[in-house]
Amino acid sequence: MIVAMLGFAIEDSLIRLCSLTIPFGQVLFLFGLGGALIFALICKVQKQQLFFKEVLSRPMIIRMFFELIGRLFYSLSLVLMPISLVTLVLQATPIFVVAGAALIFREAVGIFRWIAIFSGLLGVIIIIEPSSDGFSPYVVFAVLGMLGFAGRDLGSRAASPLLSHHHLGFYGFIAVMSAGMIFSLFSNTDYVSLNVGMLIYITTLVIVGCFSYIALMKAMRTGEVSFVTPFRYTRIIFGVGAGFLLFGEAVTSSLILGSIIIVLSGVFLISSQTQYKKPT
Image (cartoon, rainbow, N blue to C red; front, top):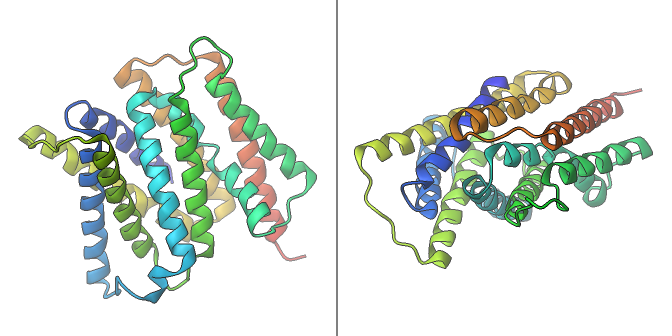
């Protein structure tokens, strides 16, 4: 899990670095195309059929829609906002997943878990500082990206068990590729030719992104969920560290306070959810 979080932080940094030289939509398109090809190859080697009726099921369509929204707006926020701030906003995703599960799937959520959910929301508000002079409207993209990923995770819960993690990876990267195409269409930007340096950056982005996803799935499938999941928050260290070391971003007291509140709320929700599922 820690290796996966480090990989995702590197992925975020590479998306921002690549977007400084080539159009943002082209970065997403190439990233999605490369990732989809890798997971298609994995499915081919494992003799898993890529196209079958469950792919067009309602939960899967919903999952891909939210994957597209999440990837598009989260990646766009990486280009326009400090990586440290965007990374911290993303950490509220599990909190909104629990809230969505309560509202959509009617999962039991007691008063203390609702308090944790609203505390996590408060942490996000502290991080983005909507009342401060330095507030940027671009932070809405980060929030939309986080909500998109929460919707994707909820869609994954309802997806058919016949869809393996490699299937989800393939169609997830298809959504990334589609997001790049849609952004390029609406922004009316032309793609540019890539030099050797940019090809190396894009190739590294694809490899790191796929490896991180596989590491994440490996951790969730083989480890005790209640033990492994809290280590997702190590992404805060890597994301804030990348922002500070690579892009000279400042670490403010509001970022620290908001992240502490989000982490504590998330860990409480994870532990209480595991306890609730244990047989009595």
